[in-house]
Length: 271
Ligand code: NAD
Image (cartoon, rainbow, N blue to C red; front, side, top):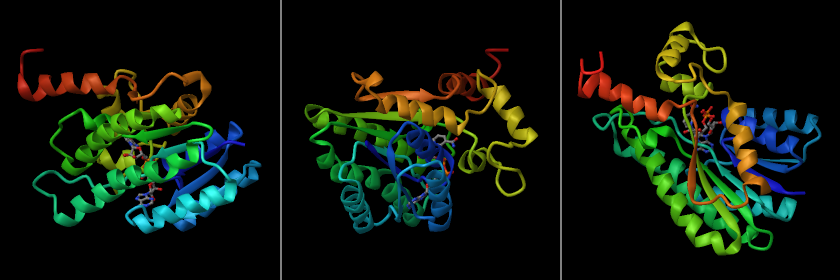
């Protein structure tokens, strides 16, 4: 039985990805710092008949990361897939960054994926493996609203190319998956849905209007649409895909740039 280790799996994209892999017959090691929600997600997976290991781990600690990888390898005897999905919600602009929020985001969004890749990859050497780094369309779109988040996601792209090159000889494929606007608490937060607006799949009217005006497919993506892409990328059907970025964004990335040009750089020109 193949084994997938998925970070940030208590909720959102991570939980959906764990469900997708469990349905595809994988044993899943689910990692999150939120122990209570992680255990609830773990119970749901077990009720589906999945083999599950829950790892209550804070990704800002290298010591805890190393322990989580050892526990997974000891418990299941192998690691085939690593999905670096967890990220902090540090969404400050360059004016708002502090040494603390900057470091927190670097630790969780960039350092943790690097060391998880370093420590998981020896377990993939015998059978080959797949590492998927969840980045963001934000890595490409300078909107001026989230300096540290965008920097970590752009850094994760660089880490993807470098890791893919170094590990290709061991038949380990490394791919970046960049979601656009996906209906989760994080996605809602990011789009101004904080506090007074419902998060998750039941988005407020304002947020639906926003999505309809910006996203060519005129809707938010679902966690299942990201999860099924991860499962496909990890499968043998994608066996020659490595060192590249796949966007799951309903066309958002390219249109967003056009919108910026329209509204800010050359106002009036496209009317
Ligand atoms: P989410 O906030 O719903 O879930 C993130 C999970 O990561 C949470 O369970 C959280 O507890 C966990 N986490 C955060 N910090 C951690 C830490 N220090 N240690 C361990 N676990 C930690 O987010 P989501 O929307 O499901 O996003 C998942 C990934 O997709 C992230 O990398 C995010 O940047 C990316 N992404 C999301 C969107 C979107 O619109 N939702 C868009 C682009 C990229």
